[in-house]
Image (cartoon, rainbow, N blue to C red):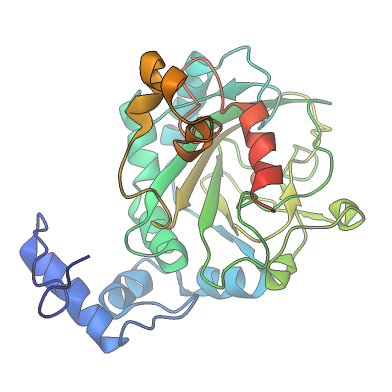
Length: 303
Ligand SMILES: [Fe+2]
């Protein structure tokens, strides 16, 4: 790749003055911004949004609760939106899923671009982060209970990078208590920067209890699982993940997978090289991500 003279000299961003502040922010940290460090351009915003205490808890324990993020009327409306888009698919999240929600209802788009969420995500997964997955879930009493804890960046080989790669925000429409099926966490497990082993999958967990209007957020390394709902009624929740920019293929050759003549004649290894077995992009309005491909990635990415 060619190197421009001066950092960002050949960049052509939409907003030049905003981009200039990013360039000076990189220069201030000499390009060495550490994990959990707040970049210069973001510092005043984080303070103004009152996120410093939440970020400190997040760094120490691998998760936190951000209180008073959303208006109750928006959360009431969100319950209806998730129910509208819920499918009968039994997917990876819970016993009722509303997959692939971005761009289908303005309220969802508004919630996943809330200034507090985006600023918090930027500290954790970097300025160039992208949205990963946006889905709703509906948990009933005695519904789906997962088989032990996991890390959300479960397709990353261990040891995980010190810079977090995946951050998950969960927005429970009515809040969530232990009884109501709150997500459960192994506090501090992110510090090990690896997947839980067979025994550790059944580590002691504690619930992340959230009041209505608040958000639970956790690091991609921290071990956690869904919690069983013991109370009657349902827990309706919006899940939104964001991912660090790297690593993606530079050239997008995925169109070749659709060219059956080409694929028939191509070397047999080409399918894997082109992402034929990748779970990325397999979610749709009708179904959650392809579980078989996801499970296959859990094996291949550890080798
Ligand atoms: Fe998870």
